[in-house]
Length: 99
Image 1 (tube, rainbow, N blue to C red):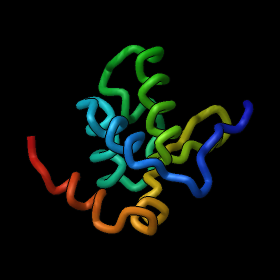
Image 2 (cartoon, helix red, strand yellow; image 1 turned 45 degrees about the horizontal axis):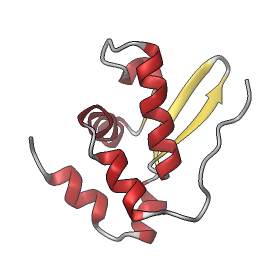
Image 3 (cartoon, rainbow, N blue to C red; image 1 turned 45 degrees about the vertical axis):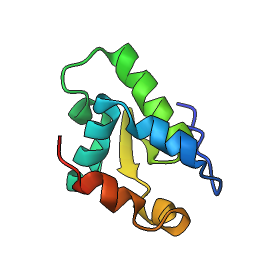
Image 4 (tube, helix red, strand yellow; image 1 turned 180 degrees about the vertical axis):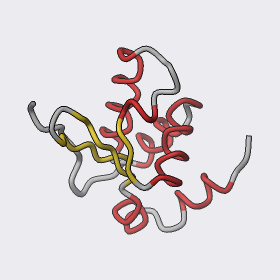
């Protein structure tokens, strides 16, 4: 499997906010916040693989999630430290909001 691309140092606020504006992606971020690390299958909520692939790509492109290949499994983790260094308190503020 080829490695996933992740922005290393450049977070763009508009991309982060766009990624978090979708309820499915926000749910993924909330679950990763609780779980720490999870496979795509653990986070898909029974949704089609093709649409989940899109959501994970948007989250990776925004810099919110890091995905690593572990054997044949894609493991995802929240890039909390990197995001907090760039936008202190943003993630906590968003996660503290309830639907």
